[in-house]
Image (cartoon, rainbow, N blue to C red):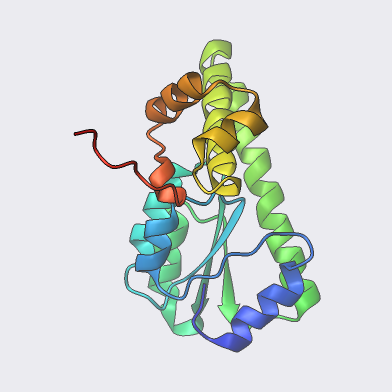
Length: 189
């Protein structure tokens, strides 16, 4: 997101009731959070030169996420690159009226969902099923770890998955409870 508080406030007013918002002012901070927070929509400011790395990382780790680039009129090359790298849309500053901003973001989300479903329908059944299951597992496990702050016992109780299987699933999907606040036990001596 953009470091400008007026821009952030406009997005909060537009999206705050529909989404759980996470605001990061630096791309480096957002890159660290890519594996900890599951996103439906990401608005990425192109003002930071590291924005393409964030777009690439989100495309790899969260293919379900709708990406919208945020830039100024003079950043046409950066916007084109963002669209080529996987952003669904772009928004120019100064921001449009909040009603239009909301409609643009909802349209980008709908377009992303429709294109994702279309891609699945072009795939063989077994490949599409595997992709959907993996995506569900990753989203569920990340959400579970986020809400339990990485506490395996609490996650096990909430999910109904025994701790050993939960640990196996987390390892399989390369999700570390430590990334969500879990404390590693001291090594056994």
